[in-house]
Length: 481
Ligand SMILES: Cc1cc2nc3c(=O)[nH]c(=O)nc-3n(C[C@H](O)[C@H](O)[C@H](O)COP(=O)(O)OP(=O)(O)OC[C@H]3O[C@@H](n4cnc5c(N)ncnc54)[C@H](O)[C@@H]3O)c2cc1C
Image (cartoon, rainbow, N blue to C red; front, side):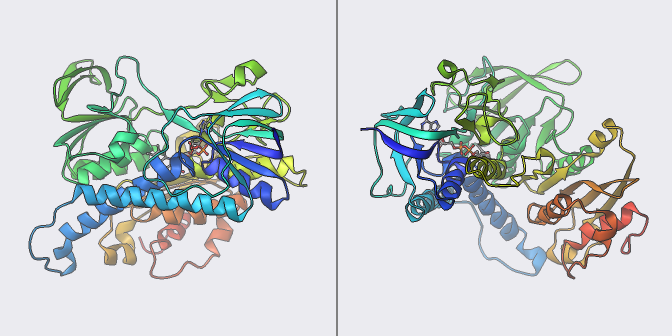
């Protein structure tokens, strides 16, 4: 018998489960369908387990440099790969258990299986084509199963999967995606990472710190190509110092496999082809939306380049069908999915004053070493938009807290509109900048000007003081440099 809901969400990632909670808070009868793992890619194979791996790398790095802090560590320090991976998987399990708890607490029904839209207002849930992820916390007790379910509003939050280049498809053994890179059975001696976006460079950073010889091949002229060029160049210098080999404006054109290694043909900037052999390769050339086999074509839901087309509130072109998160297009970030979820559900519930998504105010964070974080326009984009700008910069070498921490390699760059003083963009590289960026995100959201930032008191000693100094520098008033 068909169940009736106000809202059904397909997919329980950060988009889906947040939409479910907000809908329940607003008194809507809600269900979420999941086929593989509660909490989606983010908690199970993305944001959180990678940060767990990177934390192990950070602790290893600190231990290896203990003598810089006046500490003697007896004996050798070496990574225990199985324990590192087990810790990361245990954290993923804790996260999906947490979402199970939240569904129960908010009286959201969980439906286990694979959902397909059959007509507006209806889905059919069948046996999942995927094996449930291991380890996974037990599902909420009253989890529902296969069947037909009806809802006034259906939100598609099916996420994304790794993109593959033709002829260089991941095989799970020699050519990894992020799935295999997250759970290596043994440490490769050498690794080639194709693509230096956030996912590629985070894995490059993890494996390099673990002692692996890492080569990165990037087709664009900078690592992390979406970032401000100056910040990318700063980060690259640090990666170079750490011994990563990075080839920019270079392209993997072909991969030959042997029993336990790959040889990549890399077309370099000058057109010459170099053969690079490595034990393993990570293909990190982006992700693509999960739009197939969910009934979108039959219902005429518009898609574009692998993603569902939506307006600023998550509405598709078909009434009653919405999309949020990775499947609704870039930037493919968990916090973008969550915010889209809240906007979408509040609009469905008819709340007044719901603001549409403003993509310019979505921060981006990369947790490599050094970390990179940004919000708003890069200098190049601001100029391309014809804006008259002032730019401020401040280095970590002139910040007492950064020096005390032994983390003096970093910088903050701020970009202001010359006429109005509005903060247009902020770009940071260095220790803990993924935590610091939020100061600038709040400032941008409040449409702050340089004057208000200069009147803000930043605590001492903190690395956050570099943020204020960068603002002062934009106006020729930096105090500590
Ligand atoms: C290695 C890696 C690191 C990352 N690090 C970060 C980071 O640090 N910060 C950040 O913001 N983002 C990060 N991301 C991106 C982030 O994980 C995604 O942006 C986020 O998970 C998107 O959320 P979502 O809800 O749209 O989809 P997902 O999290 O992908 O969830 C979609 C869910 O839908 C389910 N599903 C799909 N189809 C069906 C169906 N037909 N029926 C039922 N269920 C279905 C899937 O099983 C999945 O659980 C990272 C991604 C990766 C891969």
